[in-house]
Amino acid sequence: PVDALANHTAGGQVRFTTDSRRILVKAKLRERSGMYHMPPTGQSGFDLYVKDGDKYVYLKTSRFEHDAIRYEVELFKGNDRQQRDFIIHFPLYNGVDSLWIGVEEGAQIKSPPPYGRHGKTVIYGTSITQGGCVARPGMAYSNILGRWLDMQFVNLGFSGNGKGEPALAHLINQIDDVSMIVLDYEANVGRDIKKTLGNFVKILRGEHPETPILIMSKIRYARERDGTENYAILMENRDFQKNLVETRRAAGDHNIWFLDGSEVLGPDYDECTVDGVHPTDLGSYRIAKAMLPVLEKLLPE
Picture 1 (cartoon, helix red, strand yellow):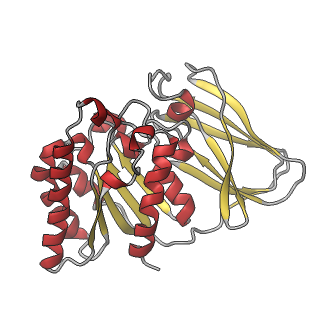
Picture 2 (cartoon, rainbow, N blue to C red):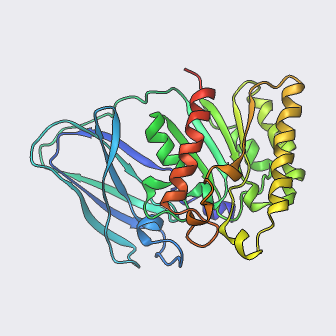
Picture 3 (cartoon, rainbow, N blue to C red):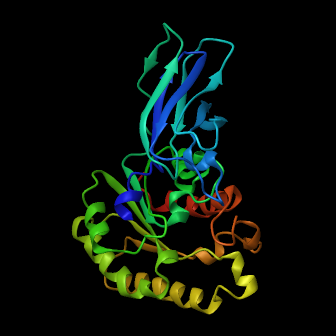
């Protein structure tokens, strides 16, 4: 499953500058959409952001037949020809075989402005990390943070399969120019977090002895309300992760930190999911909002 999910383009994006008054995309996807709890726009769509002042603002999401493999759609139509900086976010739960970006004949296309922050933030986790089940790609919490921090994010969310395997830690160690690592995979392992997390961090430290590592425990699920989610186990796993961080810090690893995921959605956490588990746009936005001040504090200037 990890090998298959690695072909999903969650976190992928194209950044560019152009004076074109029109932008279109022509895409060929790996498979048809068909998730019961996530709209095709999030699973298989592209959305477009434009820079307005010092921030990127949302413009439009691709519209297509829900089961289409190929589609062509206009994402931008402006009145005047001026240089604008754009981001196109890629589908979250599908692969992309090809993407063509269309502009007006004679329009200029330039390299995008450099990121405001150096390096990459790598987030390893679950379907929640991958973007399930937001309505459009730009609302995955890694994409939100990437825009807010003006920084490159690498989304390693593996739906149902963020299980802390050593192989994934070794693969993270192969990524170059990493400034921050976030581990958010408790949701896929439950109590087995106790068997995997310590070794996962140990492997990462082999290549990243000083890189900040943030461990975030699981968010609260709405299904706590009907008793199908055990709050006591949530707290047990949270405390284990917190204690692991404190133990490592006491032993001299001062660049490892903990964020209590049970608090990030707020007291009305039950209003933040589509199926009792996976965040809606609201839930994903709140995760990003809670992580933002922590990342700002930990990332290098």
